[in-house]
Length: 389
Image (tube, rainbow, N blue to C red; front, side):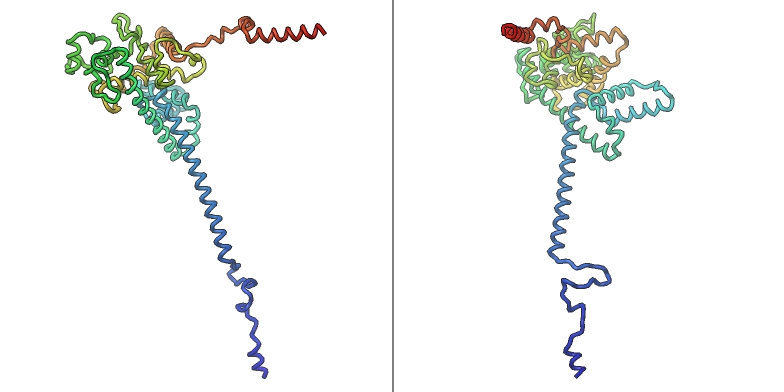
């Protein structure tokens, strides 16, 4: 009896209890439902996706910023030297300065790189700090994006000038053979107008033997970067007695500068003075921009028959030409040459941006102008009304 009773009464077993109130086993695992676990997994995944989206958006914004900032590099700092070379030269000079106290015995190329680095930090003031705090991978990524923007801007500018210069040449020279905007093969020395502008200033393009020698590329008429092309000179005329007279003052240079730095439509007004602020006084980067070195190189490329951007065109080395122009403005032999450069830059300021006269607006002059006069009249009426009451 007792045995049967004991068989009919089930023993107390945790395995037979309500699972919602199950006692944890020795592993310490607390039971959860599949639905709760799934909800938590979904929430975790959604949080990870949101984080990825934010990081991707942040990365995209950073890329956009660096690419946009990089567009100024080829325009106002360096056209050929790599950013890595500029940075390396500045680092080298600082290390020499720390050890020896002075930096002496630099080569011409090293000086050019350092001037390029200084111009770069003026154009992008935040860059020097970023290079100091970023790790190697971050610096490489930043420089890669800056170069992408720089190369894109150069491509845009050369494409713009290719079209515009064709129109300017047709309008100003009215040659028998018109240039087509979409065709560069007919340009260069094969075209009379382009050939005249590309011709070394010391030679007379009007001389048939000179034209034939240049077109046949004879040894007596080697066109290289060692001669200033005629398109650089005011009115496209050259004085052998004064080689600097009119240099870098041509109409086509002003048009090209305006097309790139202001707007293509403003390039139509190249004969008179511009209308704007004196940027030489208000913008430290203007000096490098107004030297319009990149513009000269791009104009030469647009006049040529070369279809794609390259460093050497026949016997003409564009990079050496670029360096010669930079040296003219930045490696002057003395104060006399410096005054001439400053005067030339002032001329460019007027031609492109105009020159304001706010320094002439003295209190006496302002007192006679209508805004001040009206204020005085209104005050006088109020005073008269007060006295009559």
